[in-house]
Structures are given as C-alpha cells and as structure tokens.
Image (cartoon, rainbow, N blue to C red):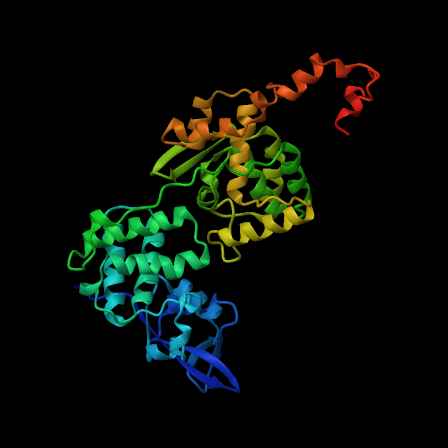
Length: 402
C-alpha cells in the first residue's frame, strides 16, 4: 500500500481553562494552517502549542469535513472519541463524527486516488470517499478482511434508517461499496449481492412564477439576488453556478457556457435579457475576478451559503414550500414547458442525457392539466341544479358546494 502524501493531523482531548477542547496537532504546513483558520470557533493556544476547538460532536464533524482530502486525520487515543457508556452504542446514539483508525485511513486515501484515477468527477470522489469514511468509522477496529455484506446492512439499519436518509443517498452508498470491492478485493463483500433500493418516483417541487419573483424581491443583498436570478434564468445546478467563470459569460450573444457539467459535458444556455442590468450592477459593485460568485478570499462561493440565504429569502417571502437551489432549476424547466417550449430544447438547455429525465416535468406542468375539465364541472353544467331552486329545496349551482 502506498504511503499517504497528505500531512498528518493528530486529534486529542484536553481541558483548557475549564473547558473541554479538541486539540489539532500537526507539523508546520502553510496550507493546512489556512484550512484550520477557516474553521469557525478555532483558536490557537501558545501554552498548549496547538490549535483547538470546542469538544462537541458538531465541531468534531466540522473539523473532519474541513480536513477531508487535505490531511490524514488520526486520533492519539481513539477511545476518547467513542461513547463512554457501552449502552450508548445503540442505533440512536451512533455518532456522525468520523474517527478512523490509522490503517483504514491509509486504505481510504488510496481509495480516493483510485477514484481519481478512474477520472470520476470531484463531486463523485468526495461523495464516495465520505461514505466509505462513515463506514470505516462505524467498523472501528474490525479488520477489513472480515467485513461482509451483513456489515453493510447493519450500517444502513443503524445509521441511515434512524436518520431517515433518502433513498438516493442509500443508492449512492451502495455504489461506493461496489467500487470499494473492486478496489479492495480482499474484503469479504460480495459485490453481486449488494443491492440498491428502488428509486423514488417523487415529483419535483415547483414554484409559480409569482413565487419566484417574490423570492427575488425579498432578496435584498445584490450579490445574493444575482446568484438566485442566474440560477433561475438559466436553470443551473448549484455546482454549475459555483464553478461558473466570468470568461464563460458572453453578454453580446446573451449566452453562457456551462463547462464540464454533470457527465463531463459542456452546454450553452441562453441568458435572460432582463437579467443583464442586474448582472452589470453586480459586477460593477463586487468586481469578481475569476468566478461569477466568489467568497471573501476570492475563491469559489460555498453551496451552504447559497442554501442559507435562499432559505431566509423564502421566509421573508412567506413561502412554505421546501425550496432549494435545485427547486429554481425545476421551476425553470416547468415554466419553459408551460410557455410552449419543446421538450427536446428543454432537454438540451438542462443538459439531460436522456429525454425521459426531462419528461418528468410534463407531470407538473399546469398548461395542459388546466385544460382538463373535472367530471364534476361537466356534470354541474348539464345538471338541472344549474338553474334556480326546483321546489325540492335544492339550490342553484352557485350555492351547491358552499
């Protein structure tokens, strides 16, 4: 097994000035220091000669997420990070923080390189490796050669089911385990017996045009309004928005190029003419250098920030639906369909590989559905109840359903 080239971070716990803290110790590394500084609530102790954060499961999870792919994280004493009471190791008490034994950390790092060598997208590598990290944390010190399909089933039963994890996430986890079996054939998993649950067939949540306009109106921050406006006006995925560079926006042709989108495909999308003044105002005010949406350090904006201010805007607009950035993409596609745009063009604009995916929006479009008359409406038109009271105490149509 190749030795990991990532810097090593050792975690331990200690009481500092009366508070329980998690210490992060590592050899000097400029990039790693920059990463640790980005963790909210972190502090440096000269007396401890260490960075430290509050000893909570939330902070631990945040530390591990921030260091993922940037450092090899191990615990000086893994027992410190496990429940003290054995009874707490029940389904409800399993912790989400990933403390991985050193030998498994090396396998995880090699698995990441394996996926990258297969040329999977950055998002896929991050998702699959995160699932495997969760699974390794659940296994604790159980040897990988003894791991079998029942361990996978127990992980789902004890971790996914109590958290009410979505079916799509469950399916992705099984995919990650199938790839792991190919990468690490010495484990006891039977790839053919690992089965995914059937896909959900849920219809997407769609906003009305009025609701979209209310959200934009209630988004007072210019940068936030520009981000939401671009997602809706072009039907972008959140990752496509965050990766969009200024050089890929062609104002003269009113187009933007979505580069290396899902499935490693490029596509052209039409820019809304009414969005151009907002775009110009935003660029003149914030002066982004490379990406359309940039963070405070000039790097990519975070998806968490977009979801957070979209939630605030929905609350201000008094919209009770569960709205995410992808809801704006669903709404874009549905509104195009209701405006009479052919499904084949919508498929191209959305970057769907299969027309069946785009056809989903025909089930939520109101255009044709509103033309369908309910049998009750037709019956009421033909019924003698449509007139005045007929002497038997029955009233006119206007009052019949009151």
